[in-house]
Amino acid sequence: MMAKIKTKKPSPVVRIVDWRNLTRMDWFMPIIVLILAIIGWVTLYSATEIQYESYFVTRQMAAFGIGVLIAALILCTDYRFVVALAPIMYLAILVMLYATLSADAIKGSSRWLNLGPVSIQPSELSKFVMVYVLAWYFNFVGDRIKKLPFVILTFVIAGPPILLILGQPDLGTAVCLIPLTGIMLFLAGSRIWHLVFLVLAGIVVLLPFVYFQIHDFDPNPKLRSTMIEAAGPYDLKYHQKKRIHSFLFADEGDNDGDYQQIQSTIAVGSGGLKGKGFQQGTQTRLSYLPYHYTDFIFAHYAEERGFVGCAILMCLYAALLLRGLMFARECPDMMGTQLAVGVIVILTYHSVINIAINIDLLPVTGLPLPFMSWGRTFYLTTMACIGILLSVPMRKNAFVY
Image 1 (cartoon, rainbow, N blue to C red):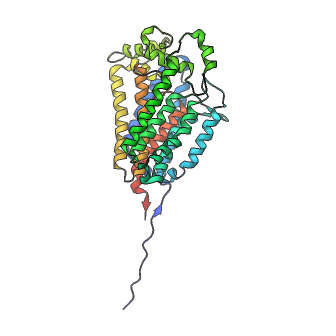
Image 2: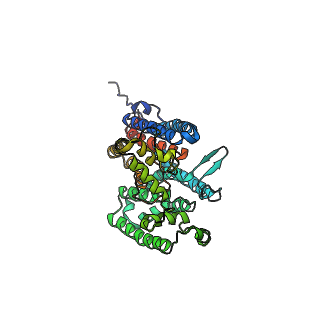
Image 3: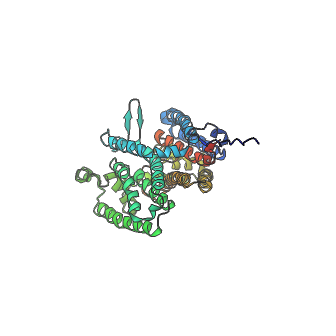
């Protein structure tokens, strides 16, 4: 009898980059992204054409093109490989954030880092990086996250970026990292009472801090220089105190402090049911609405497109986020689920908070609206987040024989 020849089954080959993912990706999400991008370009052109012609919209479209390439690269890259690089990315973003503190201030904030002909905003990149860092950490500690010391260590990791961003100052972005950390911590399996304890501790610290910052604040512009000189490095800045004071005490007649939200509310309300039409928004055309192409672009959009247009825009955001949640739910491993949920938290935070500010439900802080507001670093970060979401369903194709 002939001896049977045993053949060894080939070991699985890990493809770090698999360009075939482009043909296997979910096409519903890219279609939603493209629709949102087109709406954003049209709205941005309407908001800026009278002063800047096509300067902003052409650069925003170029950022979209670069963002598509970034999203495609992330989509085709095994996210486990990128997560393994998270400690290096974490150190790099800390260095970049620290470098911005000595950069030239623009409109009172040192947020931009000049790299030759290109300027980037490291605080925007930090959100994208922290999703990977937290996913790496939770995968590293595993079930030990149920112990309080490892829960506290999570905020020790998130703390340096938050403090460095606050020092720029960029309150809106710094606050974004807090729910991102908390929700990913919950998803990782932390005990509920640990999270409740941390939330209560945060409230106990935050409320007295805000009270002592605001209780004796005088919005009189004549006292501004004195207040700025007396402020500490992590005190709220004069304009931040004024925004909070105006929001809490709007009936005291501080019209200068809440001017932005007054004009934003007028723009949203004047849009009515169907809006005034393309390039017919008087609040923008007559320069009443400040920052109408960045923080308050939703108010400009609402004035021109009305309630119907706003409802369509919100439905598109909801479809995008729900699709991302579906990816998170169906992902075969927890690491991919954490990445998807982290990205959804970032996009939801920006969308909800920006719209709430525009309709006077929250005090003003500088937060852009995804796919709508001008800002190339934020646009590229948003497209990178889309790439992460699209890469999560590819996990089942990570091994080939």
